[in-house]
Length: 336
Image (tube, rainbow, N blue to C red):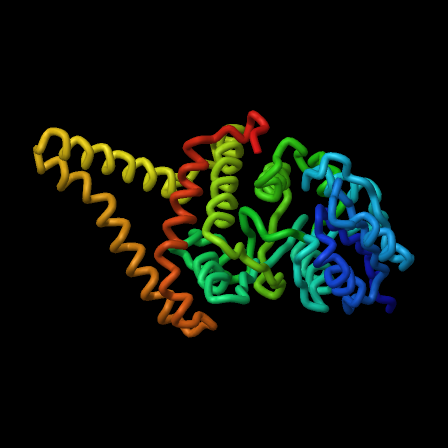
């Protein structure tokens, strides 16, 4: 009795100004413990740090190919790499992702075992500084980001979306590839179309990708503002996907704005019952934030004492930025 042939895998990597991390990321892919044929396709955007030259140098390895991504947009680069891919399995990685040596093998095995069209695992946030570690803990807590398995972990099973992804190329072709108008949230939107076409998206905790969080509050605020704006765009295009979880942050921002208006009105009119009403949303959120901080700091993780003091500001930045981005919208108009 002969065993089934091992499918060829094409790893696709869109990069833009990733010279610092590119060689390490490529090395991790080429050292994968996978029994089948593997190729890597790097889609390089218009970089200013020498990424293109380094990618061409790395392409001296016959397993590596480079394609141009003139727009620099992630979904465009992904589509360019998919078009050039020879494998029947597509594994998406990022230029700064850190994957274990069995990542590809586990992804392919899970696809074959479950019959899913896309499988993925955990976005394992790990900080290198007290601030980065505090952001990592916030990004892996239910209070910080909700209950999505790819953030907080959980049991294997079907999911709305997963981090990055190991796809059947036939599924990507079936749904027309990535939507190049989705500068952010393109993975969520892609997985929605896969599910709507009758396919399955599968989460497994066995696949973990190390992720380095933002290192300043400003960078974190911009990141989560963009997340909110593009999630609003997904909701505009697919209103059936709106849920209470996605409305929580916009509702918080709205409540805080109303509270601020009531406080200002109380100062002008000297009618202090308005002040009491205005304080309620601020006090309620502060209590929930501090309670979540205490629970996160007590959890046996790498969280150091210095990081715990940063958590309230980090939680507030993530929630308010995401919520304001969702309220503001504008992603559909091509705004950055």
